[in-house]
Amino acid sequence: MQLKGKTAIITGASSGIGADFSRALTEKGCRVYGLARRRERLDELQSRLGELFVPVVQDVNDYKGLEEWVEKTFSRKNSPDILVNNAGLGLFGAVEELSPDDWDAMIQTNLTSVFRLTRLVVPFMKQAESVHHIVNIASVAGLIGNPNISGYNASKFAIRGFSEALMKELRNDRIKVTCIYPGSIATEFFEKHGGTHPNMLQGKDVASTLVHILETPDNFLIDEITVRPLIPKPPQK
Image (cartoon, rainbow, N blue to C red; front, side):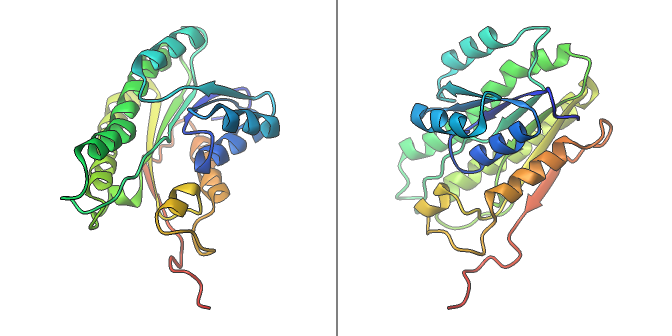
């Protein structure tokens, strides 16, 4: 896909790898609708990225709001070329200590919102003749289970299954589906869960991987990719 002149939707765009994705795609000449809840973060990002970045203050868990925004923004002749389902939530703890509300919040944000936005966008993509692309951001936690993150594991394992099924369902409609499984990245997410260190992945490098995936030839599909730091532990002091 030639990214210049294309239109992308990125959820969770105001910080972390969502902001890095937004920067990488606008630098390629792509118009990015960046969805997030924090207006001040979105406005600050637009001040750095310019007019190709369009801030959209929208909670991905507000389905009615999502539906109204999609219907207002897109049409048969103006479909989004790219959807990056990036918004995510991690709430950790032993299974007997994880509250039902925390479980529901992760399933809602990490899985249900992905289904709902994808469901709204796919009809527009199907109507277009060019190749389109949906990218779901999972985690290595969607490949292997670990103690005290059972809810997060469950939501990311589900994204893996959803992505594989969606890929097989949509490929004949010229819609690519890719699921990315990142390891530890130096972002706010990990600052809240154990802290960051210099050996972690950098958001800009994950963003360059996204660009590579999107720019592959039309008949070339990368359906899954895992990215990890080579040396995951903190540097020795």
